[in-house]
Image (cartoon, rainbow, N blue to C red; front, side, top):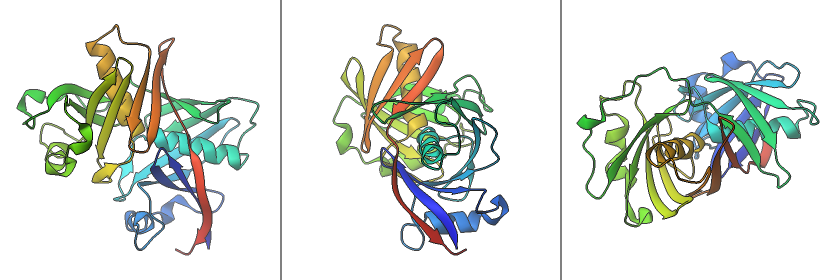
Length: 268
């Protein structure tokens, strides 16, 4: 019987295992799909494995619900940080860093119980795709493409974002040939100068999730690129809650809650 922790970060939910209790090799794609299945397993958008540790540093490996490995997950970083804090995996009086596939991320624990994580925006394994080939659906306009550890396409609407049916168009855009590794698909709607609604269809989950940390960060980066006069703090409303993306001293930070839902044991 292997212990696990279920954590949600603005509705984006994860199963967390760590190497004190389970070997990474046991987590085959088939087992990950079973664990993330909401009918037959625990149920989650993804699975996080906390690996080797050093003083003040954790190693996070992230898997999508379909069993594929993801380079990074912004909400997953906050979930991993919450787990580390609750399990006393580091000295809470010192800084915490989490190493993901895309690099090392700084973590801050805030007085209001939210968690801020640094999102790395300077590294990408893909080239900018030719977006002119994309069939942009009626009622939407192209904002751009940005890699925040994982690739994101961003479209905008001036109508009610809540009335859009992402399943009508997002799957085909997610797999469009211009994206070498596929892409996540985000839709944004402006609410105020510093506030936007965001919906995301996630690659690897193959469905809309309640929020996506790298997705709202990609939206913010493109908004800043297109309008440098926007505030340095943007609030992104997702179905799972509000996330803040801020730029300070050359760093991009994602801030929001992460909550333990339950703990348990499962037999593999």
